[in-house]
Length: 104
Image (cartoon, rainbow, N blue to C red; front, side, top):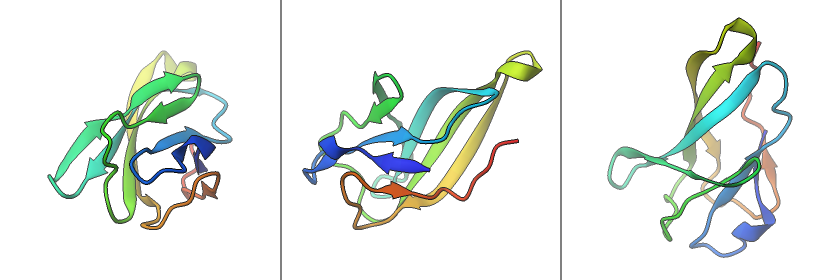
């Protein structure tokens, strides 16, 4: 689950937190896809498990994310997990969206 934090109540600011992210993976970083320039941008680790976009203009349309994860159980292997269109175009602050991705 990806939750758009309550701090994202203004359209020019987006911050997220991954919910139910436990177990053998540590999040090393999150990227967000900006379709207007067709590139992935790094999100900033604002604090704790909260990531935000320092750019004052979050991407329009459904939002895709790419997670960089470290598997702590397998000696630190790193993997990338892409979450296509995980946040809808008209996202709302305080709402959690199901990524439909389960890490095993």
